Length: 82
Image (cartoon, rainbow, N blue to C red; front, side, top):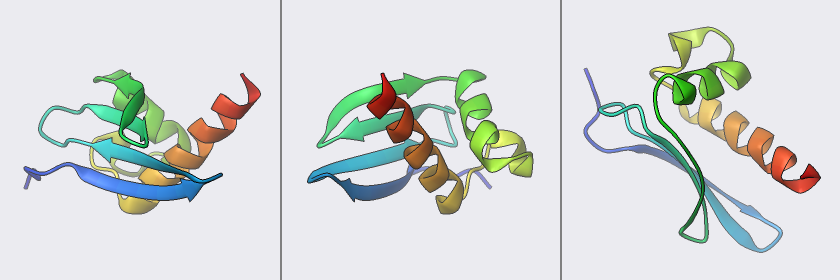
């Protein structure tokens, strides 16, 4: 069954609220900081981004909260080095 509402996880990092949000209906994946869009992916790129941190579980099309948290931490590490 496809979820109508996006799956969302948040983390507090260096005083900022960071959120990863995934819509099963559209496959859109967003990373936001304090509500401001930092990154946005659409299929198949969103699926590959999730699968790259989560492994082959669900092939990135149905991420769990743990998958999104892993993506969130991975992207924050990339943002810090750029």
